[in-house]
Length: 537
Image (tube, rainbow, N blue to C red; front, side, top):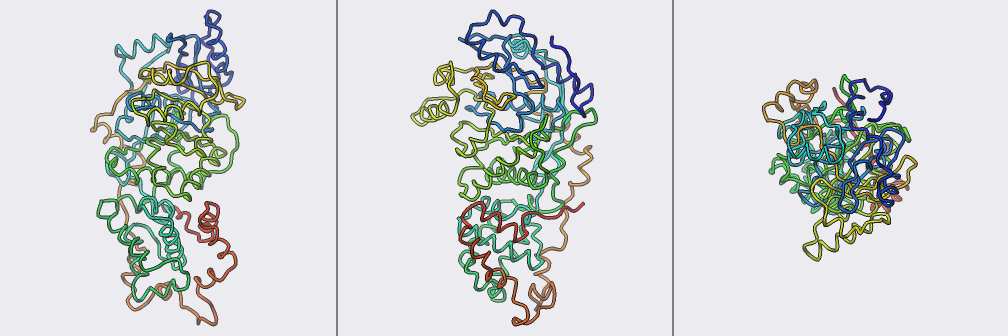
């Protein structure tokens, strides 16, 4: 058994003890390992704090003296957990999340299938667990971890998570509404107009009211001259919003808006809080929940300060069913996502994308993912075989025949390569993974509801609030337009309208030319001031 290390700053002895149980044993039998296995094992012999994934597999034999690990400081270099359905990806997330929590690192988990909630309760020692523990020489103890449970808009078991339309922004909303590039740009102008006129976009009816006003006889003149909002385009946006609401999506937008700083908390005993967002109740709306996860990540990026390289991450964010985020995404959306992933590392946040194959993730995003846990792939069809070959090409040179290995891995086995403490890729290692110490399945519904209602956050977010915003202002304006509601207008000669000022500026014309690019779009959003709403408590 390895010597216990001094707990990291902010982690109590109890939390450190939990982490220490999963530290690897001394490799007393390493000399007996085959030479190739010794070389691979040497690549994972880290001196600092690390998370333990499992034991090396070589020639079909599990070698428990050769432990495969991930250095804790490298968890903010992002990662990919991939593999076919039923190969054990969810259990891998659970295993990593447990050890992060034990090390004092908060974790965010998207629970697509509704079976991650078990992380809050101790696991059960059965024959399968006992066999795995013995194979990989794991010191296993049934342990539950501190958790908060959330649900989008309160649909499902969890504290409601909502966002205002303003903070969600036109880029993310365009993806949810399946708008094309022209419609996306027009939606950006609508957001800008509402912001300048003091028409707060809190929920969907606010946005629908503003679009309806701008398509009315009274409102058409408001955006005359911009050339970016035709009646036809506004009509498409309005119909998309109406259909979106008819599908029951209105609950996800509104107040109180969720403060993403809640995800960065630790428990009283120093362990990191595991935030579980239940998505099972909305899994038939994949475009919505995948985009909402991106909003959470983007909001964190906006708020967190730069910290550079840190001893341990401030948060590790697991993005399940990641392919749904990229499907049908515009170039501007993908560029924005790539930049967020690239830069959020320096804010201490690690992002793990979870999907079936590496090809589900765009190359520019995949290039940012330093840690890889690849479960088994299937090669039943020509497309499967093509995906297998593409996946193999994304790994460093290896002593294994990866095409053969990846199709022969069992459940709970994976091919691993991570970044070493020096930031270099480790050797590719076939790994028999450890067993999670928490419950591998969902928490009983009654216990889950009880945990949600006893949370200190429940009173803050449970009840939706519908205050005066754009819908109410436009509905009650009478003969007054938005300008008269906000402030008396001067004559055109004295004071050109906001729209005229913006359109007439050289900066706007330059930005308009580059609006198809991510950076042009982001600068425009910044100037327009619609990137994020102020928090209200």
